[in-house]
Length: 191
Image (cartoon, rainbow, N blue to C red; front, side, top):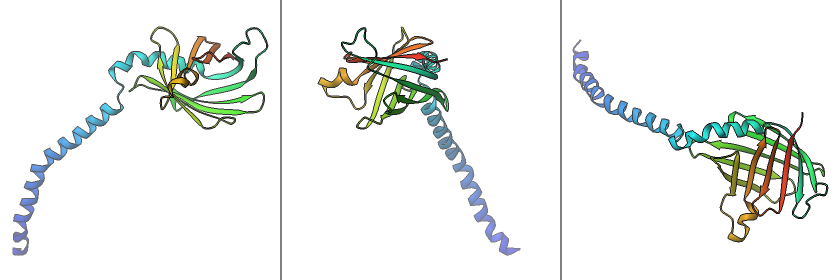
């Protein structure tokens, strides 16, 4: 019995220390949880863009036939054609797409909206290209238009050539074109 009495002061000291430190540890944990909640919660400024972004992405899901005309070809047949299939990826703020040109080249990519930043992001890989295309897009508050610029920023003389607009015309049509207007792609929904 005396053996246990000698350990009582040690146990009391441990309990006292735990009772003093517990509120501190709880406060630290609470602060970490609040910081994480702020990190994953959408920025208040991005909230107005959330529903339009969902709408644009929702309209892009499906099977599309596209035609590409290069600058100067105003009334001739398209210079290139193909098919794109876009599907939701995880949720309604992300989609993935695959594309096959009629000349057998292939492409695939991801298009997503980040509610924390209020911006779209796109990545794409083209079988006939030299690397990955990474773009950040600013949505227009007035219309279903997204202006994409490359990441990292391009050289000044290539800015218009490497920046693009995606414009949703109606539920069955959208366009993708560089800002230098060197070509334009018109996408038409397939039944």
